[in-house]
Length: 446
Image (cartoon, rainbow, N blue to C red; front, side):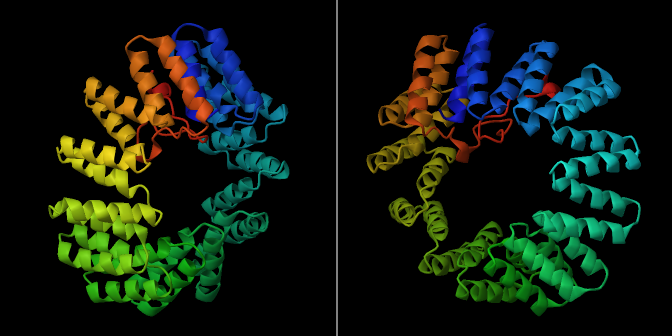
């Protein structure tokens, strides 16, 4: 079952007063490797005032491997029983074999100013295989001015596979004046998926007037698979009024296979009000087979009143791999007040095999209080097999008090195995849990 649907079924049972079935569903999911359902159920129990029940479920989720449950458990204990009790219980969890509790214990000791005890807990966590504890230790050494010790621990963390440690090492090398070493480490970190160091080195070099060095490093890290430093450099040049330098960099990047740089610069120009310049750059990017530039051109054509051209470009973008170009164009019409045009386009998109726009429009209408329109659109999308629309329609029925029909739809959505909870359109006001299911309000909302 998809995460959203199981969670909704757990919530539905809990709301109807059938807590026993809700717990059974959550435990069944936990047994299948998804303990975060227990955490979600615990949040609901805490909101209802059942703190002991919440604590028991969070301990169970923690024992089943849900690291986030410890964060909520710590919050619950600190609010209800005080930091001392929280520390005692965390120690019990740690003694039961959960090394993540040691990191929370280190945080408590660090906040209390007891860095020696914090370091001891972090070392214990590192010995238990939590390699990110080594990086936390290195930052503790930095706090007391022990740069040599910090660098030594960061090297150990990097050797254990922590890419963020590479970023710290790059910064330490840069601060020590070892520019070559800093750049090598920044590139290594970027290749491992963390471009923080590269971005900082690029920014420092650009601001110091070493433009060619900044550009070379940004392009090298982009070639290694990390684009943040190049994005940042384009923005820095544009903000500084160096339009020629920004364009030169974007075209150089496109020549190296990064057409998105032209697209990014087009977006910046468009935001600045230079729509003609934005369109020219977006066309260059589109000619280099950037499907996101095609989507941007569709929006520009829509703004210019060329609806047919906008639709052609959106379908071209979808054909090139950017299927979100279609719902974005429809949502652009919806937000501009062109509801009839949005509906007509959504049905055209649905006929082409993409039902997500109907589902997204249904969601927006529901949020706006237009239940009738929302239900019509959701029903159309659900009938076409869209699992997200099934979930939304089930929620509408649940709100109307028809729990039986709602649960049937949740089950149907689960059976498709494809419900994604309309994630691209920020449906969930409290964000998403690690599994992709909607985050419930926590204790601050009690």
